[in-house]
Length: 297
Length: 255
Image (tube, rainbow over all chains, first blue to last red; front, side, top):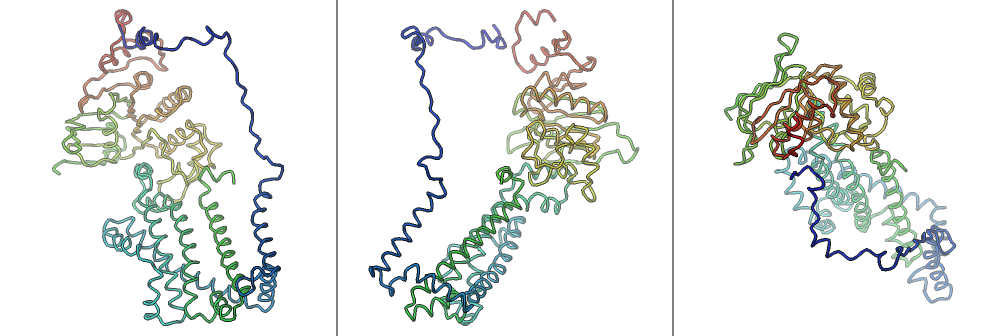
C-alpha cells in the first residue's frame, strides 16, 4: 500500500458510506430546481440620493410650520426663514466672515502647534526604544485626562486672550494624532522592513522609504480625529471671554436672546467641520493612491 | 557571543568570487530549541543549489542567516557581499511604483533606465509605472525577481519564491528563474519544499534534517530537464525516500 496512490490514499469506509442519505433521484427522479431571482437594487421609484434628502427636508418643513404657527416661540428657537435672514444680514455686514476667519485662525494655530509636537513625539517614541520609554508612558497617562478640565489652569497661565484658546486646541489635537502616528509606526509590516534591509537600505533610508510612508494611513486617521477634536476645543475655548470669532458672536447673541444668530453660528461650525473633513479626504486620496481601494476613485 | 562572523566577501580581493557561501558549524537557537545545529555548507560561485526539507527543519532560518536578517548565531558564516533575496511573498513596497521598487536601495537617484532594463528582462516592462498592489501574483513575483537582478548579485537567495503562485504561473516562473540564472551566472540557493522544482532547477539538492544537511544529491541531468525522464524519476524517488515519503513499490523496483 502506498500513501501516494490516490485510490488507496483516500479511503471510503463502507460504514461511512452507509450513514450518508440515499441519493435524491432514487425517490423523486430529477432534483427539483429553485430559481434565484435577481434583487431589484434601486427600488421604490425614487433614486437613492433623492430619497435620502426627504428626511432632512421634512424636519425643516416641520420646524418652519412650528415657527409660523407660534408653536415654537422665537425666544426658544428661531424658524428657518429667520435663520436664513440673519445669516444673510451677518454676511452683508461682514461680521460672519470676520468671525469665521478669526475662529479658523485659532483652530489652525492650535492644530499647527499641537500637531507638529505630536508628530515629533510620536516619531521619537515610535522609532527609538529610549524615546518610547521616556515619552510614551507620559502621553498614555495624559491622554485620559479630559482636556476641557484644563481650562481654569490655562486661564491662570495664559490669561484670557488668544493664548489659552490656542493652547487648549493644541493640547486637544495633540493626543489623537500622537496615538495614531505612534501606532502607525509600530504597526509597519515587519516583512517590508526586512525586504528593505535586504535591499541595502540604510537606517535613515528605511525610515524614510518604508516606516514613515507605512505609518501614513494611520496618521491620516489621527488627523481626522484631531480635526474633530479641534472644533470641540474651539467651541469650548471661545466660550471664555472671546471678543472676536464665532464663539463671541454666539455669546453676544445669547445675551440678546437672538436664537437665529446662535443657529447660524452652529451651522457655520457644522459646515466648517464638513469642509475640513472633505479636505482630509482629498488629502487621503492623493497620499494613499497606492491603496487598491482608491484606484477606482 | 563568541562566534566569529565574517559577513563580507573575498570578491573585492581578486575581482572574482569562487565561493558564494561558506558556512562552518553554524548554530541558531531559539531559547532552548536548537533550529540549526552545527551546520556546514559550501556553495560555489555560479552554482545552483536547492535546499529541501520538511517544514520546520530550519531551511528558512538558514536562508535568513545568509541574508543577514538573523544575526543571533554561533559559527562562521561567509556570504557574497553582493547578494539579493526574493521571498515567498514578493514584499514589494506598496507605496512605491513598480520601477521605484526595483531600484530602491541602490546608491544615487532612482535610475529609471536600470529599472526598465531589469523589468524588461522579466517581461514586466509594460507594468513599470503601476502600483504593486494592482499586479497579479505572478507579476509581483517577477517584479521581485527584477528587484533582485538589478543588484547584479553574486548570490541569489530564493525563499520558496513560487510557493504562492498557481500551478501554471509557477511553471513559467521556474523557467524564468532558470533562464536568468543561465544568463547571469550568479550562485543560487533555492529554499523549497517541492522536490520536482528542486530537481528541475538545481545542480545539487541538499536535504536538511534536525538542523543540519543530512543528504546531498548531485543532479547530473542535461538542461532543460524533463520530468518524464526516467533518471529524473529515480532522483525524485531518492529524495522522497529521504523525506520519509513511502513510494509505490512497483515503481521503485523499476529504478
